[in-house]
Structure formats: structure tokens, C-alpha cells
Amino acid sequence: MKLRRLSSLADAESSEAGFGTGSVALAGGTEVVPLLRDGLLAADTLVDVRAVVPGGISAYDGGVRIGAGTTLAELEHADASLGLPEVLVEACRLSASPQIRNMGTIAGNLLQATRCWYWRLGHGCWLAGGEKCLARDGRSDEHAVFGNSRCASAHPSDPAAALLALGASVRTSRRELPVADLYRLPTDDDRSVTALEPGELILEIDVPRPDASAYLKAMDRKRYAFALVGVAAVRSGDDVRVALAAVAPVPWLLESPDGDAVGFGDATPLPGSAYKIELAQALVRRAKDAIAPAG
Picture: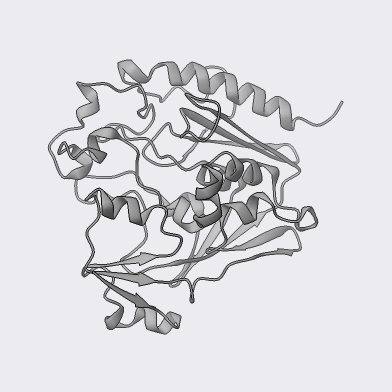
């Protein structure tokens, strides 16, 4: 396997970069390296993009701009004067162990692969090109309760749910788009869960600054575990937005942020994952209480 270092964005877009033809972008490596190790990702060349993907955090009127190469630890410990929304700070803090947070970038975290064990263990599930989602006839306690008609894998990113609730947008090497449009449910014709094209790099994330926000996460152990359910709640004036992690193949924005059955009417849990609805409802209520105006 070869390593190639990019020196400019023009270099990234050149045919020599070879994205989509056996080359894979590499920044922090906390996602790509394990996938390569486990045979879930194949590459002839690793393309080091750290020189062309910006890092750092800067404030502007009404929001914060984050370089895609910024680590989760840098976001977790960002200077309070920057006004980084609490929901994103907490989502980064809860996302992984300190070692991972110190290496993993925010862009890499947004592009995490599912933790579904059928896919990870090479069982030929639907997401891997097979004919059916194996969670439907097997163990499904960590699987999706929304958007799971074809694939019941659950998207693992905590910061993705936070950015979705915030109404953030991303700038790539080719365009600008809302975080909501960065993700897509897989189809028979295209089983990927993001809208990025081959070779397209996330460069920056623009994050509006809300009046209040909170992130809550239920795990099967106290620390450093992937979410069973994550809830990001954001309030701007009277408008409340709630997004969930680990309940769908993509980060999931609730149509209604109510913590009862409203907002969960389109859930289609598998037998093992039905508990996630009650868990999510409880976390949504707590998150909404946390961001409610004083008095």
C-alpha cells in the first residue's frame, strides 16, 4: 500500500489523486485504519489530506466556523469565548475515549461507518451487497428504529446528530450543503449513506449559535461506548429542533420534538430494538427541559 500526500486542493481534484480508483483519504485515521485492518475497506493508496483540509475554530456574527480537520478534543476544549454550542461540545466529549478524541477529526466522525455487527463481521448483509438485512431475523438490540426498510444499521456519530439539530452546513471541495443533505438513506441502486461524490472532501462546517442546546446519551456502560440512543436538542427563540443518534442508518431529525408518541409515529423497530423508542422519548423530555427558557 502506498501513501500519497496532497499539497493543494487542485492536487486533490487531479486525476493523479485517484479517489474512487483504489485510493482512500486519510486524516486522523481513527476510522480508516480499523476499517482497513478488518478488511472492510480496500485501498491501494492512502491519500494524506491533512495539508489541504483546514483545522481550527473561528467565531463570526451569529455562528462558528470549524475546519474539517479539527479534532474532537479541540472542539471539546474550545475557548468559551468562541461560543461553540454546548450540544456539540458535549457530543464530542461523549463520542469516544480521550485517545480517539485527540486524533479523530470532526469530518471523519461525520463519515463514520456503521457499527452493525452483521456488516462488520462480513456476513454478507444487505448493506454489504447481500439480499437482505440480517438483523430482521437475528439479534437487533443495537439497530435502527427509523428508516430501516432496507437496512437496520444505526449511524454511530454523536456530533452528527448535534450538527443536524443545529442546522449546520458543510463546505466541501465542490459545493456547500446542509448537514441534513450530507446524509441519505441507502437505496437498492446506491447503498451509501452520504451524498459525497468520489474524491469530494469536507473542508469546513458552519454552525449557527442557538439560544440553548443540550446533548444526552444512553450507553451500555458509563463511558466511551457508542450510543444506544443519543439526543441533541437545540432551541433558537421559540423553535426547538431535536435530532437523534443511533436510531437510523443516518442521523435522524424528529419531525416533532415532543417526548411522547408524537414524533415517533413513523418508527418501525425490530423486536430487539423496540426499547429504543421508550429510551429516546425519555431522553427527549429531559433534553427539552434542559433547554427550556428560565421561568
